Every structure is written in C-alpha cells, then in structure tokens.
Image 1 (cartoon, rainbow, N blue to C red):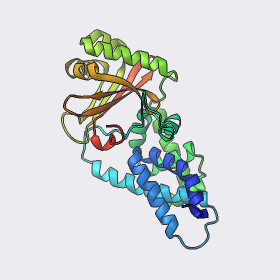
Image 2 (tube, one colour):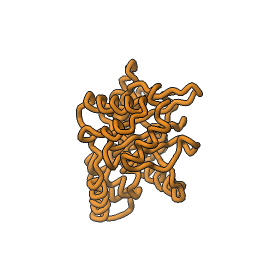
Image 3 (cartoon, rainbow, N blue to C red):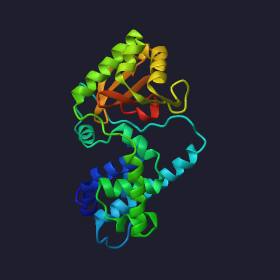
Length: 287
C-alpha cells in the first residue's frame, strides 16, 4: 500500500473501524473480515469521496448490520448460550496490537447484552454512544430518519441500563474474588462458592454447539454453585490466570487437548457472570 494515498488513509482508519466492528459483532475474526470487505469496497469505488471517515464508518456499519441480521436468523430456535470471541492476554504475552485492543476493550458481559439487542438498535447504540457518530450518518445506514435512529439508540440504552455490566475497576480486586472462587471449586466447598457468587449470577457455556461445553445458561447462586461443585473441580485445578476483555479470567488446557477460556464479571466484590468459551473457532489465536 506504500505510495497509495487512499490506502494510507484507510490504514490510519483501520484501528477505529476494527473497534467499531468488534463491538458490533463480538468477534475479532468477523471484525477483521468486515474491515477487509470495507477496504475492498473502497478500492473499487469510483469518484471522489468527500468525507472518507464517514464513508468508511457507513460501509463497515452496513456490513456488520448484514452479519447481525443473518446471525439472528440462524439463532432463532437456539436455547444454548452464545458468547463473543474473547480478547485475551496471557501473563507472559507481549502483543502491542492485542494490548491496545485490551486497553480499549469492552467486557464480555456488555457484549452479551449487546447481542440481545435488535441489529439496528445495536448499531445505533454502538455508533452513537460509543463512537459519537451523528444520528444523520446512522440514519443513512439503517435507512430511517435521524429521529428514528435516535429512538433506536434510546431503546438500546434503556435495555442496557437495566442490566448491570460495569465490573469493579480494580483488576487486583477482581483477581482476589476469582482466586477465592477457584479455591472453593477445587475444594468442592458449596458454602464458599455461595459466598463469592452474586445471588443472580449467570453461568454461560459456549462450546460452538458441541456438548457438553455448550449448554443453556445456569442462573442463580445455588444452581451455579451446584453446577461448579459437580463439574468445576477438574477445571479449577488446571486454571491459569489471564486477562479476558480487560477483566480477570483464566485459561484451562485439558489433558484431552481442549482449551477453555473463562471470563468473570465481578461487581461489588461478587461474581455476577461466568462466561466459559470452549469454541475452538473463537480461540484460534490462543490455542
């Protein structure tokens, strides 16, 4: 791309486009595909683009919207858990690009909530509330009026506002809570598990549709503690600390060769969400 002014402009915009696409899709792989498709459309474009930044955001937004609509159709009959592709930093890892994504990452819990929104609501919320894109530009993507686009973002905001998703800011505090959880799981200590779990805790398991790692969500401290007491001991004994989407997490490499990444959301000193990702397609950059 050296010497190509259009390509150089695109490369400067790439990190922002990738961040937009990841928040829209919850997948680094799909985000990279969307950004690449945006470049292909730009390279095939004819004529002068007055505002390249707005044009690129519009195009990547439309691509992501199509992906979300197709995804919603595929999942209509599924009751299993879906989890995003995690952004992971291993303790010994030093990847500047991944660290930059982690520093600006959004937690797994919020990505799960975003997945529950209608595609157009998600786009309006992400573009306006996270990236400050004017509603006039969003309206062009969703083929609605600016006021209708504003209402989409407002509905998304109300739904997200009803769902706690902001974890405790101190990663060290999160880690202490997760360590206490792992110790209780290794010991099979039901009461100790209850002590670190929020009463409304949710356990999600996404194995890419394959049992036993893909199951419907388990909700409530007693139900989750019972699940962990029965199934969690082998995992807890092999767990190694990592950072998952900016929060405390663990990676488990099982003797069978299977790798599982588990992210924890800790709010008020208790675990509110446990997200277990064993889908190999979502862990390709980790395993």
